[in-house]
Image 1 (tube, rainbow, N blue to C red):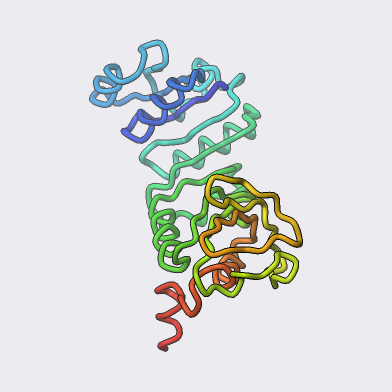
Image 2: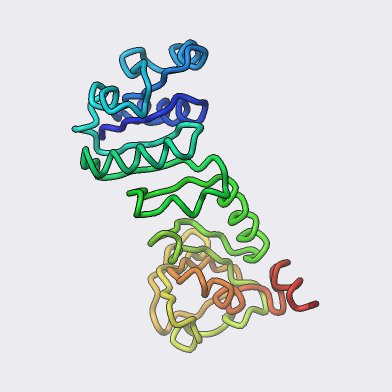
Length: 234
């Protein structure tokens, strides 16, 4: 994969290092002398292009017409928006990613500026905290469809509503499918007659909005996450 990174701050340099380590082709564009002095010690010199990352001539010199991904990682939100717009509108880059520096500008980073993915660190932290508070012992393994669906793992707790029941008798959330059951060292197929036991680890694909309902079925009886507990006291 050929990736152009606009901006050479610490986030951009770390991204470049990781991608190069995965054998991707990376061209990073940066013009600040102090930043250039640092990144020349972090990534190969042949990956560094010295110049203004918002300058179309510089982008073309770095090979944007052949790039598969453009990551706009400058410290100026307006520049990141312009880069994504140029990348798609003029150079037809298939995938654009933009860093959001000021969370108040997050509403601008959408398809009208051709931003495919916007990285808002404040928003990510808030979502992680909310998820941790609301989902008890359920573990999210993979998020799919932009976070609308998740592959989750939950251990059947003693006394859980699902404990001792056959799979066919479970009242699962509408948008939920059990994928596998792990019992000790065995991976069991999910069949209607399979009886769930305390200690079984259940893998399920579930709509994110219905994870709490699945947790109520598989987890400890009467155990709700801190966020739900707080709501119940209001």
